[in-house]
Amino acid sequence: MRGLIASSLGATCAAALCLPLALPSGALAAEPSSRTDSLAGSTRSLPLAPLSSDRAGGQPRAQGLIRKDVLPFSLVGVVWDNPGTELAGRVEVRTRSKDTGAWSAWQQLETHNQEHAADSGTEEGTATGRRGSTAPLWVGASDGVEIRVTADGAGKRGGTEEPGTHEHATDEGEGRDVAPAGLPEGLRLELVDPGEDPPPAGPPSDNPRATNLTVESAASSAVNAELAPLGASVIPELTKEQTESDLVESRGLAAKPYIGPRPRIVTRQGWGADEKLRESGFGYTKSVKAAFVHHSATGNNYTCAQAPSVLRSIYRYHVKSSGWRDFGYNFAVDKCGNIYEGRAGGVAKPVLGAHTLGFNTNSTGIAVLGSYQGTTPPKAAVTAVARLTAWKLGLHGANPKGRTTLVSAGSNLYKKGKKVSLNVISGHRDGFATECPGAKLYGKLGTARTSAATYQGR
Image (cartoon, rainbow, N blue to C red; front, top):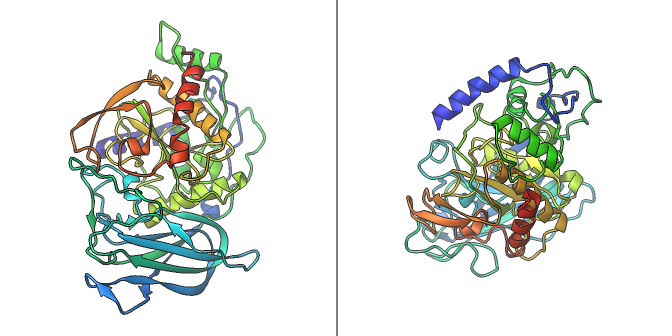
């Protein structure tokens, strides 16, 4: 993957410095957003302490922090030293609202998060600096925290209170080590402050300028140059006719393609990604044969106006806390149906993500912000998934109602090298034994498939 990353970086930097004066079809001139480095948030990492003298496997069976005053934060998670070790236990946190001073009830964090990571054996999957981690939880603006982490019995696997969570490994699959009757070493509480929202984009201009972009932001934006001007906060939607015309013209197609209208997409610049956090290059796969739908498991206690802050927090948690090279998912969708660019590299390109362990190659990952095991996802979010997949899969000739074959890179369901037949629009649980994307969201994927195919004109 290093070759891909290195070559793409050079091409992107060149594109950032040599953008055409003429805008591509469908692109609207816009003043670039302000640089994001001044809006950057922060991450604070606090080591957990023993809560009892009871020990197992050399480690305390309970660790945590008693009520503690801290600087403001909005998202929490727990990390540990070895990314190959599973936290077999229960993680609960309560926080104090910065606005009201009231303490929340105890909330449980999803302990199994590694299945959203890069594939085993890849450069990103074996990079130094990676850590084991829980799923992050959005708690809103807070200035106090209390946490307790309790180990399960010997050999047990942790999870949520509901039975069957992440416990469906098969004999042919490949799993992770479970810490022996204790907790992993190096447990730390991560407190993430998303920083400020970026200012609104300036008024349209006939001559877009990008002098206020950092080099990193210019590179991230340049890979979308065929869709929007450098520094744009939003890639505008197109009609189906415009989308088809652009694709026919750019690829010299003889027949009209099956593709849905390009949806409106908020760029990384639009949600305020600090491009200095991620690795500098971009990684690509050959094609996009399937879309894996996830829920972020970050909770549903957010407003759509807060979605950019949630994204900045998850991004910072993926990179700074978990040691990933960038935001893991290729796209995100909020409860109001807004679509966001995820991992950098270009929304129309086959960007290699870190979302479905074992099946990141030739796929794209879409995270619906929230937790949807027991909560029904809003109709707007399901519609957005359908619109996004109709366009993204259409770029690669994929039928949303069809099936495709992917080769497993190794998961707890399918061993490395196994050819697996999957729905073109699949849930995370189809490639990995996991609860994700939650039973309620998973139950809506049939609707998304049908709608996406209709958008494509099938």
